[in-house]
Image (cartoon, rainbow, N blue to C red; front, side, top):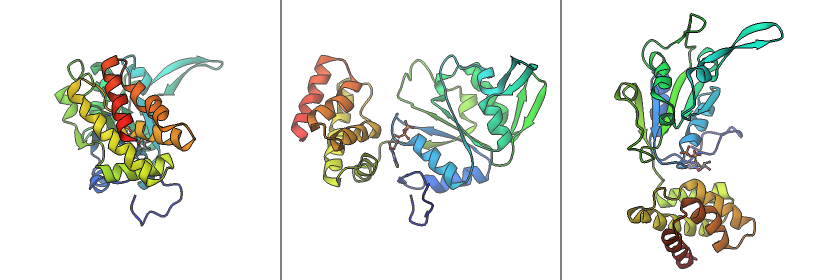
Length: 264
Ligand code: ADP
């Protein structure tokens, strides 16, 4: 967050380098955006911050493999007054000129994601098959999707015809001093503890080479900081918030516990 953002309700976001200006340009030029990066590294917070900065409503949709086109676009529902059309969250965002954030978009089936195509190019249109309407996107509407390229990479990926509609932003865990500032702010702990947690996180991330599929995110380090700040002993907090969520494999859990012991 830059110093010239005085509004008290600004979501806390520490910029990594250039992504705020790039996103503003994408918004101005009506370009759809794709945020790539591991889970818990700040993608959602970034979108919240940009929506605040651009003064746009934000509509977030968590994608999963049961998500249907009707869940996005809307459906006819039977009520007391008969059958009436109800907009889905995507249609609401298109009409309101909101930023529509589809989190973990690769979780949605390809046939569901196709509905985004006419919205993510110059047409900026949403055809609603069930009503026969075509809704033009209001000014300010912007499509933002996120995905974690490492996760289930072999099983799921986005079709090239979908990917090529987005300007891609690469996200990763911030450099240690910046990550420590985030952990201290969000975890409400002293900088020295935040630095120690980030150092531990950096060491644990190296276990990826030894088979740790998901490495500790900034989110997990913040959770540990909050527990410690609340009076939980450091080793217990690190086990509960960082080690246990990451693996059930005894050898990996043992290796992580050893690293916790060596760090504090
Ligand atoms: P993602 O959407 O990538 O899974 P989030 O945006 O939810 O991750 O990030 C997890 C948490 O980490 C956030 O709630 C926030 O507390 C913190 N965080 C990560 N990166 C930043 C950042 N650059 N500035 C401020 N907070 C951050």
